[in-house]
Amino acid sequence: MRPDKDVLIVGAGPAGLLLAGDLAEAGIDCTVVERRERESELTRAFAVHARTMEQLDARGIADELLSTGLRNPVLQFLRIDLSRLPSRYPQVLVTPQYNTERVLRARARAHGAEIREGCEVTGLRQDATGVEVEVRAADGATQTLRAAYAVGADGRNSGVRRSLGLPFSGRSAVRSMMLADVRLAEPPRKPPTVGAVGDAFALLVPFGDGWFRVMAWNRHHRMPDNAPVGLEEIREVARRALGSDFGMRDPRWLSRFHSDERQCPRYRVGRVFLVGDAAHVHSPAGGMGMNTAIQDSANLGWKLAAVLRGRAPDALLDTYHAERHPVGRRVLRMSGALLRGVLTTPRALCGVRDFLAHTVLRFPPLAMRLARAISGIDIAYAAAAGAHPLTGKRAPDLSLTDGRRLYEALRARRFVLATPADSPLPASVTDGWAEEVEFVTPSGPTGKAVLVRPDAYIAWATSERRPQYRADEIRRALADWCGTGSARSRRASSR
Image 1: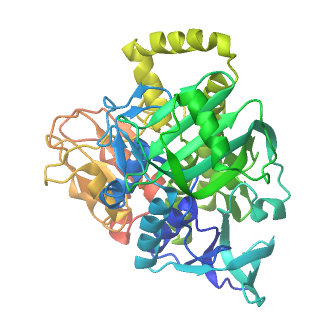
Image 2: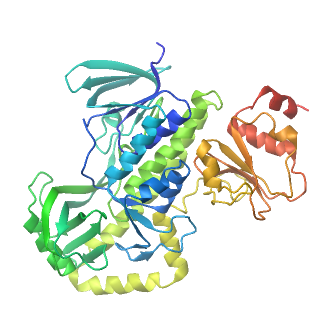
Image 3: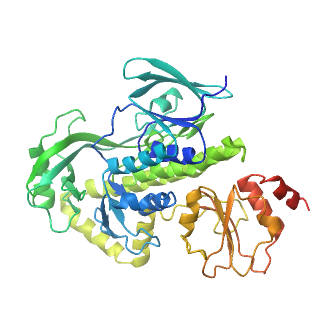
């Protein structure tokens, strides 16, 4: 059967919405189905880190999201200085998840993505040519949608993952964590505010609109997730961990949850992919969960588009799991270690813990290494043996001779080849690649030519400094990563 859609995405959270926007912008026919019937005004995630902001910058929507929250150059949970990060965004942006979703939803719809709300997936099956997904609408009507590929972005309780029969092995990292959105009669002078005293933990974060998120944990009162939460219970924990409850009042949301550390062993099964919490869940420490989810989709989107447009073989899609599964595993381990360091330390040793953490962070190389890891700036993908050392690494945001930045050039969702001004490329190399590649020149000396993927990672690089690069080497890199180019390019490469 011929697919009705190119890609069907299950779940309209941040990961699903960013993927939908990328695909729709590339001209891929995609539909998102979402169980919720309206936008949520509640949220768990609230931290947007530097690497995610760079991904949004490469899509032209970073400034819009910046306007919705507060920029904090210090990650208060760990007192880590982010202000020296080598990024345009040397901070963590604190904004409710619903703001991130609104920005991503508007972009997806502007590019033509269809978003169906109030639709629950009840079944999934696939064959050699497509995926069939059974969908039940809010009124009970059912429909079977067929797509060339499907993506499960439907969270930790993913129905797509269950349909694939995949395990979600791991464990609960912490139980009975309490969340609330509240107003404060006496806000702290320098929020965010965090405190841990061995048997109690509390974190207070401002959203910038008069609401504060409070996260609290009481070692001596751990209840099931469905147990009711009272504001007085959260106040009591805050007083113990922070020294004050700051006059908490008017809660608009109270919830109790447990934090898991789990990861799916496979992110791809045939024509179905998993992104975000459907593939991995982590502790909230460091605020890396939503960021990892968004970056999953940034990795997958351009690959799906390239395959569907006939510019890359299906094997390219296998690199999604190969590149992102190790990242998910690293985030799981790192966030888990941070959480246990805060919550499992006995009260008598809290002072020792804080002293050791402060001492470690006083060494700039160690502090910067931790800041880069949590912000996602240091994420890199494995490269083939013999590849240039830059291959697989994050592309820096170079200034270009035409007045733009590299990440502005990436907004066309194409590859970008940056070559030094003193080594111009012959026409035999550049002709025929206009649809797939933009050719740019950095404004400063680099001594390198780099081919940057649409997700802002370096696909290929050379440090050849002769006036003329080896044209055959560049053509080969373009063909390997961007397809065969036009007939004119193919004729040039055969000379």
